[in-house]
Length: 228
Image (tube, rainbow, N blue to C red; front, top):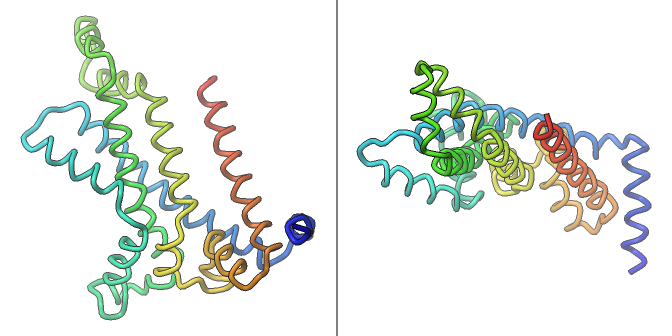
């Protein structure tokens, strides 16, 4: 067990010593995950609200499709994105393969069903008398929409947190679409898998500590927003 303790000591040295390889993976992870979360929240929250709030033909089938997409393996998403953006794919000319943008596209596909499904669930659990009350008070459509969205804000925050957790910890998309290129597309999770396989436990532990720190920071921010 001594190698584990030694790994923690070396991990602290790498982090506070400004090791370039370690912080390059951290930067790549933050760039890709931030872009994917911005896209998935922008698209997912309105779609989730519409799915939970309105009644329309084939609503049950759409909800089933979204719920099924929650279980999509990351390697399958990586395979599909790879097929589209590779040189032989329809989007090959855009040069997205082995880039952080390509990783972000795959992670958006991964996170979007989570945001839609959990946002829809939050809207469906909203008090049904709220809409009647707002209409009786003279609220217009815009006021009605934003009031209902504010009512389910905690559920939407939980949806974003859950999606972010899945994006931050995925490996398949980053490995297949990004190629795990050092100093370029190597993320925290792919670096941990690579370094652990090479026996470099200290680097893996260092990156794991950063991953935990990011998750802790996100939860602290959400807790602060809930209090506000």
